[in-house]
Image (cartoon, rainbow, N blue to C red):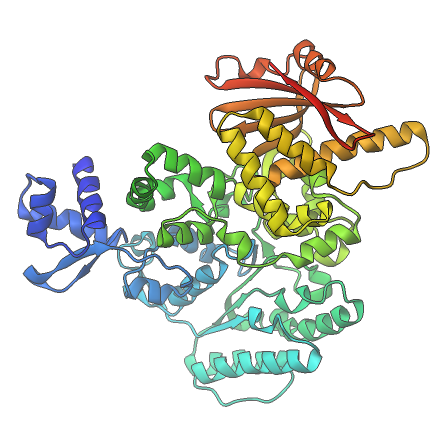
Length: 585
């Protein structure tokens, strides 16, 4: 019956707005009408398909992807796909702590989570029909809810604009709850709003604050403006602790973290669940969720691309998977990109292009850091999970913004290895980074990338390296120290790092300084079923590089993997400032 259910859903996806009789005929369904009705009803309640019309006139069609829709009510009432997170929502609201904070990258479903919590606390039971929470919640109590989206304050230029925007947000909530407007300072106004709502409705109040850090992020490196904005926001949050007897639940989301001391004053009971295993997948999609909700979508995408379902799944995983938010976290897919992929039926870099990470590149310059220095860095949580205003490196900003993620955890040392999550993020970062390093326009670097990648796909490694050789030679050479040894080490490191940037930019899956029992491999690259083991030397010979690969057994780990292994020795020349020669085995 499971296979028949999948066949029915697949048929509907390929033949939108089909009737039951058309579905029976198209799938050869042998069961009774009641069996088919049950399957269709379950699929509708699970959000896999939608039903339009009544009785015999009912037509069944694929769900709509909520591309850009972040309102739970609209998603549920208008037939959009909803990946059920309500079991975790119920666990969240049932915690002993009523003050909760969650950090996740932008475009990762925080606003939808806030909207879902709003619908739950307002007791809108019908919206949750068929979802996990329906069998767990029995009371459905309606609470007055104050929802504040601080992302609308991100473009405030000064404190006057910030005060105005905060006032507008509070005014919207006063109107929504049917309360008289109270023109006072934001913190005083929030306090009055909660007390009056509690008096009017006779129940404790719920406060949901989305993107709490938005006002400060735009001014994080403008010291004077940052302190002014922080002072305003601190006054706004100041009533939260004093209001505790009148509050049922307080939930804040954000991208980065500011210390409780600097923003929340006496709010010392804020429970940060950002690294908790229990809520690791409350935002984003797991592998099981992708298979459950998007199997038909993957098949359609594969058919359109002329590849197998398995090949399509591998491409999707490589491009959008790879986020981890706790020590035991399974792979998490970027939800924004997944919805974009299937709404457009095209693989592309959606998440990165949805916002320019200017703050991150400013941080790289401020802390004199290169991206290849932090891809694969090992650190305790205190390094990457620290408050934004006290950071001494780029790692917290890159992690909290989603450009680095947890790759592994070592319980013995209580440390994590951080890395770039997937190829979408990697190519986006390098797309912005390489033109500045190479002193070339994006068009020039893109042209090189296309030619290089095509040569690799055609198994013409010599042509690919010729293209790379010409590109390296055209890049302005940096100045190094005057001491001979220091100069040699810096030059060799420069070439290896440039090699990493270029290959990452070209969206070739590459890992540098890969550890094995005999030492570190300079780079391991993956392209389809081929693995390239790369060792680079400067002012030496490619044979010397290959000898090191052979003697240290860098290729041994791939024995029996079924992949084609190519060992590549490179010789960089400090005189010609590019690849002098190469050899493969």
